[in-house]
Structures are given as C-alpha cells and as structure tokens.
Length: 140
Image (tube, rainbow, N blue to C red; front, side, top):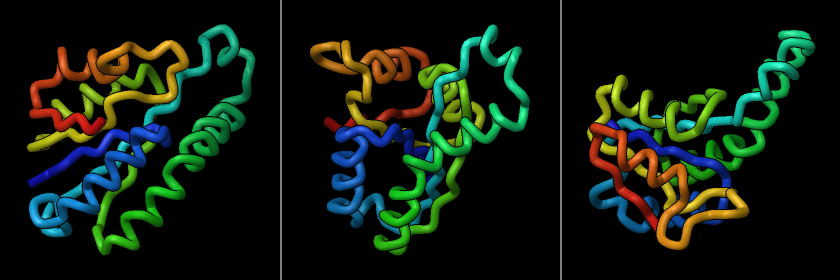
C-alpha cells in the first residue's frame, strides 16, 4: 500500500506518528511511505523583492525544522520513507499530491498549528477531506 503522511510538526502530528508506531501490524514497514510537509507561501509582493536563493533557503529551512525529527522517527521504526517538502496552501498541495501520486491512503492529524482551529476538525483537514479522492485516515 502507498501511504502519504501529511505532517506539520504539531502535537497532532506526534499523535498520528504514535498511532502509526502502535499499529505496525497494518501500517508497518511493508508499505511505501511518502511524508509531505507544506510551508505556507511567502506573499507574492514579498517574494517579488526577495532573491530566489534566499526564498528557496527559507522554504528549505522551515521544512527541515519539521522533517528532521520525522526522519529520526521513521529510522527508529525501521520504516523507509520518502520526504517531500512543498510550499503553498497546505490543503491544496496535500490534495494534489494525494490525487496525483496513486496513493492508497492519506494520513494526517486532525488539527495543525492554526491558532483559530475549528472545534471538531482543523480547517486544513476539513478541506482535504472534502476534496481528496484518496481514503483519508484522520488521527485525533
């Protein structure tokens, strides 16, 4: 099974990873994992005045803050994974990756870093569930 794991480094990402570790009998190393992290885009007016290399470095640094610990987690669990970093609207990028990547399952936490957050589900999770053609496993 090809599994896309959407992460943002929030406590809900950690809960999702704990769930993954606890359920290795059906989500273990026999599957193919891709971990995706989406960095919000710098507003176009700001991006226009920044050097491309500076902007690229910013996106890489922000993503690496999250992916570094996730690489360590997957290594400890003896699970091979591909790590992907993108920029843009989190929900749109995750849905596009899931729909275009021939994934069998998308895993994500129920909430992210948003300070406003919805009561039942986070806004990114809600948008992903509404637009994704791939089955979604939401971990609270």
